[in-house]
Image 1: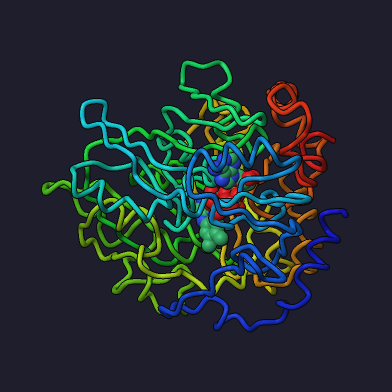
Image 2: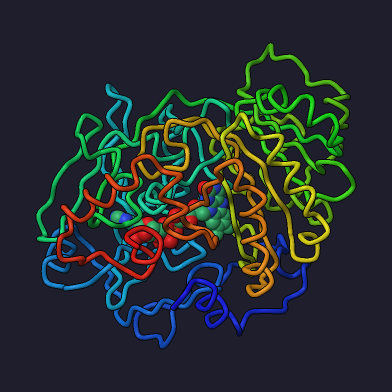
Length: 454
Ligand SMILES: Cc1cc2nc3c(=O)[nH]c(=O)nc-3n(C[C@H](O)[C@H](O)[C@H](O)COP(=O)(O)OP(=O)(O)OC[C@H]3O[C@@H](n4cnc5c(N)ncnc54)[C@H](O)[C@@H]3O)c2cc1C
């Protein structure tokens, strides 16, 4: 089934919500996707129903090894936060939900070893209490470490690589059930960490740590588009992590979120930030919504894990009835790419919740959209209108084509394998290596067949 079709068929039941309930910032928990024994299981957003008939929930590495060895077709499933079929399998999904522990903190090497299904929010506070930090986090801490790294999930910061950049080594169960360790020195490391689930099942990851630090978060409102055009680099470099939120209307960026490493003698950002004005209270990325679940702003210093994500650890940031797309663009084309999307504002506005522009530093992962390339990303959270969004994405992709934009692997897109292949120098090497690891195609699924192996 083609991408556009599956989005149509799997989300008929969830179309049509109104904007406010969709992104409400109340503390109610979104129901956990149904698992064992249920007729239907969905991803976190509810827009995709997994087709795999069997969900396995092993509690140990040995159990995973047995499953991998004995099952003919299967796929690892993390915290289900992808918006497409990347984590699905024609038959079996192997959930890592019970493999969620911290195994060891090595104070001397400044590393932490975690099980693959651990979510960043499960151990970030503990790291801080022990004097350590991760270099960055995504917008929310509810995602599994292995699942996030597999799709090159990122936060923001001109000097911050995506989250896979923290990985020092991994343990992987190969299709024959054997366990191998791959560290940074291993020639396959650059392919397997951002591996789209194609190589086997990662059981543990060792992540590099740095000393714990505090972060001060300030939000500025109504940055004029003209000012963004002339000052883009300065704006993105004004903090450790900077995000621009916009609905593309009114020739402005509605919010600039600046997260700076806190030092007692740091200078104030002033009252005129390139034409934007300081917010006078905590603000939600969508101005009209209550900021109760958002991380503390107004320059109040706090630990890295409670400022780098936009949403607090203990809360679910939205009800989940949304769709997301995101495109990575080489940083030198940032302003032109932003203006190309701004031209589409009248088409985009009826379906958008909010867009976010971030910066990510280059890395060496073969299938990372930032492979050897500093990037910005243009992310959009859409209303859960699958047909409208999937009709619009080819137009967005066309507008961004002159900049060789690459989609986020875990979000919605419509680019075909041939186009993607031309934008990734190591695509063919990735395919060859994935086939070498998995000659029988145990970890193949329709996503890989359609977008990678085609
Ligand atoms: C509300 C929301 C906010 C988000 N914010 C951001 C953001 O700020 N930045 C960003 O870049 N992305 C963001 N995302 C996207 C999200 O980070 C990615 O989709 C990520 O891959 C989700 O991780 P997961 O564990 O849920 O993966 P899953 O959807 O469960 O799986 C994703 C892929 O990883 C593979 N995988 C999972 N576990 C393993 C394993 N143990 N071994 C091998 N392969 C494995 C799966 O097979 C699959 O191919 C957001 C998504 C949502 C829903």
